[in-house]
Image (cartoon, rainbow, N blue to C red; front, side, top):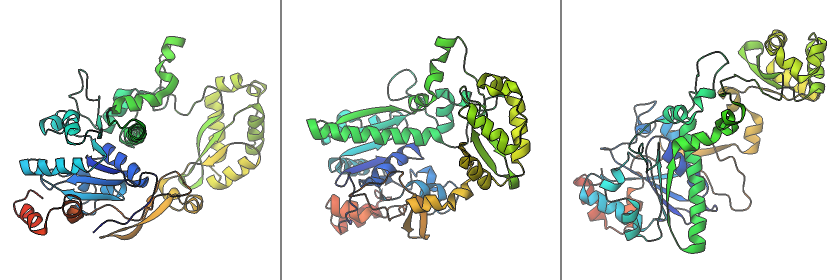
Length: 399
């Protein structure tokens, strides 16, 4: 039975996803949110680890549910010749192939770009690797903390005078995944205008390096290696996060001298003449930050933010995950979408950050059960009769 048309700018584009964990699936999620039909190839003998993170039910692991909305799941044992042949038949009916598996695995399976082009000449293949597919380090594999460390980002994260702390959030995966989705959209446009497919070699480390901005070249200009400096800002002071009542925090930035005067008045801070200029405040930054913290700690973060913004001072509550879940603005904006899962009923997810009119893709379905779309892929797309599908399941080619 055909799947319902969800609409969206990528409606009619089919993506075959040979991915695991986060970066590759994150790419697929973005494309699915744009309306593409994304088919994730899985098997019990080679399971996506995310189906086991945070739970014991392969169909209800929280991490897997958070990433794989509107994704289709088909089971196939790629370690068998018949399984590989089935995957190649899927390639023939797809527009894009995504992989983020270990270097050399696609080549050994006959799924490298040259081989895929023989199956479908205008295929687009995107491959995510830690260091890309070429070069002396292409063989190395890693996870998001590795990407962040190798990219130079971790070195810049932390408070001054302390060791680099890095981040517990997997920015390396989500950043590489978002860049990959952008590259695929560009490749689809290229194919539309030229008829040519493309091979896209994406390095997760390079994706992260692009985020450190002018810090990458700072030494060549200033002779100094940038160090972690907490929330300090070269052009603003104060600029940071300050404690409020009940363990909450507020972020405050004084963009100019007038905002500093207004902030000092609102918090009843002492204002020595030296603090009238940015340079003077920068020289006494630590004392100013301590003085601000001693005042903000008695305030409710949201109330203080409203009070300071009314005076023209950029100030906002530093939102926790719990704050975000109950944030009226995000709900009113449609930042959350409601999807349905077989095991979990209806639940909210964080949807795409864009709003499109007209023809935004519908996002209604949660993450798939393992092999949920076997019959659709094998019966509808590949045209196999029910008896053949049953036989493949019996012999664990569909596993």
